[in-house]
Structures are given as C-alpha cells and as structure tokens.
Length: 298
Length: 137
Image (cartoon, rainbow over all chains, first blue to last red; front, side):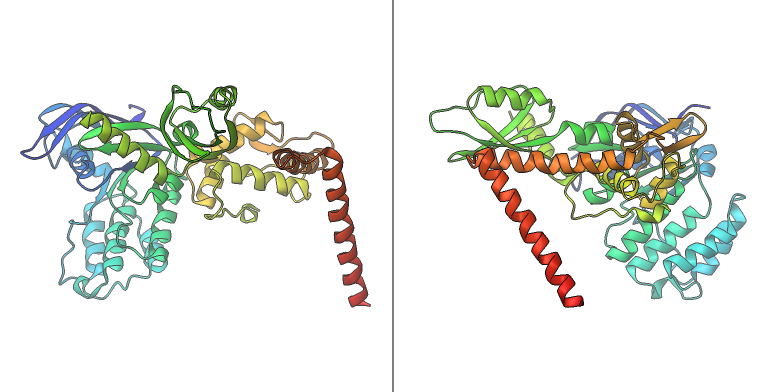
C-alpha cells in the first residue's frame, strides 16, 4: 500500500476556455488537504479528474493507489464524494436514501448514521424536496460519512451554510481525522475553514497550482512588516519581499519568505521596524492571487 | 480535561501559539501537574477542531521549550521540571515587561520615568483592592 492518499503527476486538461496546466499534487494518508482558489480556478476540474468523472488529456492520477480513471470502479468503494450538484432523489426521504446506500456499501455504520441524524438535525422522514439547502447538504454528507470511506472528497462542503451548520460539518470532518488511516480533500473559498482544519494547503489559480504545502510551514513564511521610514531614507529592495505600500512615513512590506534577517536589513537601511505581523490565510490568498496575476501579465 | 482549552477566532495570532499559551497557563495555575499525561496530538486536534499539523507544531515548540516531554509510543506529558509552573509565570511577566520597555523606548521615555509609571500602576491597583475590601466590610 502506498502512503499517499492522492497523487497527481503532470495532469493537464484542455477545454475551449480553460486549461488545467501540469498539476502536481500529493496528499499523505491521515491528513486533510484544503484546495483554495477563486471561482473558475480549476478546483472542481481537479476533483473531477481525481474521481474519474473527467478524463485528463495527459499525466497520471492515483487515488488510494488506484490509477484514475482506469481503476475507478475499484477505487470508489473506498472514496466518499460529495458535491453540490450531486442530487438526491427529490421525491424520496433521507431514510430511504440511507437504506439504499446501506444496502450497497458493506462498511455502512448504522449507529454512526443515527448519531449524525441527531447531530445534524435533518428529519429522516421528510421528502428531500421539502428540505432546506443546509439540510440537503448535511443529508448528502451524512450519506458519505456513514460509509466510513478511507478518502473523503468534498467539493465546497460548507458553501451556503449558516454558521451553526458550517461548524457541525467542520466538527465531523475533524472527527474523521481521529482515525490515522483516513484522509480528506476538500475545496473551499472560505479560507477560514481551510486555515482551521487543513494539514496541507493547495492554492490554485487560472488552472495552475501556485503553492501546495504543509499549512504550518506555509503560514510561517508570510509576514507583514510595519515600518517607520524617516524622510530622506529609501527602502532597499530585499529578497523575499513581494510588495511595499508606503504612505508618508509609514510603510507596510509583505514577505512570502520571511526570515528575521529581513527586519535587520530594514533597520540597517535607516528604517525602524514597528511590528512584524502574521497573516491570515485570507490575506495570503489575496496577496498570492494578485501577485500571480501580475506575473502572468508581465 | 481538554475542555480546558478554548481557541478564539478574534485572536489574530496563529492557532499553534494560542494552543501553546493555553497549555502553559494550565500548567502555570497548577491545573496540569508535573508529569501528568496530556492529550495525544490527534485527540487534541479532534477536540479543538483544528488540524493535526497545528497541534503537532504546538507540541513540538513546547517540547523545545522544555514544557512537555514526548516519549515515542507513550504520548506526551507535562515535564517533571521542579518549579515549572513558577517559571512559566515568570516568563509571562518577562514578556510583558519587555513589551512595556520597548514601547517606552519608542516614546523616548527614560528608564526612571518607566519605573515611576510602573510604581503608579501598582499603587493604583493596591488602592482598588483596598476599596473592594472596604465594600465587603
């Protein structure tokens, strides 16, 4: 058995107006990866290739050791996939769906399903068409969670949910991680969700992976330096600084490769470092996408 | 016992620092005794609803600071260093003092002036305590 839950190597897919370009991705077993990107960045295409729903033009995709799309039938027993456009049967109840899925998957955990019904507060005997958006999302997640799959692939699991429902979903996802052998890949444009629960972060923009790495190491590289610049002093260009905004005597420098030496270098140039701040994933996301677009245009 | 840790979303510091600080506080006030086993990394991650890698980072840093020890296969526990709680409290005080000294320097304050201000603050707090006592009487 391989110790990677997901591996993409040089995967490309060309559409008329969009190209997924040479994607490399690795998710170790027992970890959660958050896939972040703006709308249309390529998150769903990546997920669809992993699920064998879209066939890549070139490159290799392996999921739980199975080559996709060739071995998708074998792979799918161990993968739980949920996305917004996956429809339940409108005229049937959740209880009907539960019986149906339980009859197909031998790993179905009936007592966990009951527990989730209670926690999620979804009425099992009401027809799906009578449920709210949040209840439908939770119903679909319940159906994959109670199968106890080795890999969960979730496309925007928290989009459009109220804060309580969002919290319930995040709690169940972190619960899954109590088992070292299970892994999760989820896409989101809610950077707060990704920052909170991911072990690995992957940024995708315009069909290209901008960054993919360990979340702690990643957050640690980014800093905002607040500087006081006396008149007559000019800030030197420094490696690892991707942008400087200056108004009057105050300046803010953003670094994506922070080392303490950067602060010393500014001090030596005659500026004073007032504060060095960590950045949230949201702030990094925006800075990163803007920079990558500037590079593309340059 | 893990219920003792609560993370704050409005706290702008990284989550691993919040976890480190809260564990240190638990030890400083004596809730977590020396040598006491603490939750496994995965268990604490599940309880706090944060990623395993974040708790791992917090434990790693705490271990480097000598606050906890991790034995392979046995999990982690509070270090059995004598006086650990007192040391952690002293560290916290030291950090606040350094912060105050830094701001004072930025304001161009002399050390004696900072000393006076600190004494004033101490006196005012003592007065407030006395008032409270009188109210109770």
